[in-house]
Length: 328
Ligand SMILES: [Zn+2]
Image 1 (spheres, rainbow, N blue to C red):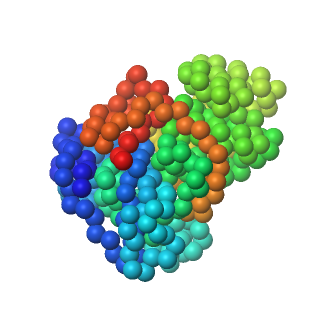
Image 2 (cartoon, rainbow, N blue to C red):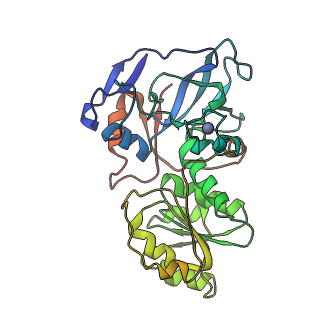
Image 3 (cartoon, protein in one colour):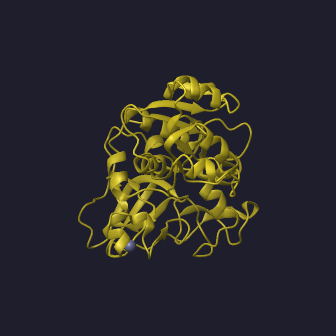
């Protein structure tokens, strides 16, 4: 099959060409990949994360059509449209049993501890697949496992609900644009922090990074926000905390711009702020997410053979929306 892969870490070492087709065990399903989302995790996988096996295929966010099923697979058949829940989990440890497969004690991320989906075919355990309703486009389907599931889980962990004010930093990013839509559907008043005017489509208010403190004060009549979603990094922690109401929650799931944060501890405990870290989401949440109507702003769709350019343009200044790989 054709795939993009590397034998040595580094974007410059990424190749496009023939790769051994994956094996299909009795509980596995072989998927013909239709579309894949390109995310920061793919950049990290290619450039420096310890991965296995080598040579390695990246690609953490995948949707496609079932090509072949193992002997014991019951829920799927050839031709089913599916999306991949990308956390491997044993289903037996205490964390799995409490519905937190993303924290499985014996787990890992597909594309980090196994090959990923920037390839014509991907083989995954049956329990890692969710069926897609006909109404879900491939662009949206291939945006659910990472860009969709991460903010969905984060908003749930932050108890977002009717009447709350949610501020989303990094609102034009992969997770940000979905966070806006989901928070709105959950009944919240949604504030986008972004320099891109198009995020207005998904938010009640849009403020730039320099206006956000004043802006949030105004729209909450001085109270402050109930929830801040910070997908950006540690350099925005102080600003994130400053727009929160006492008793509010900051939820975060990334450190893209800065892995470390410097904040006054009193600004957290003195106001009983909750700081909640999240990673991905549960399989149950992905099952729910496929039924929710979402929109994606796609900036560019690349071919599989252009995988290197696709990953390479993730952090480019000109990027304005999602990057997708059209595989078939
Ligand atoms: Zn487990």
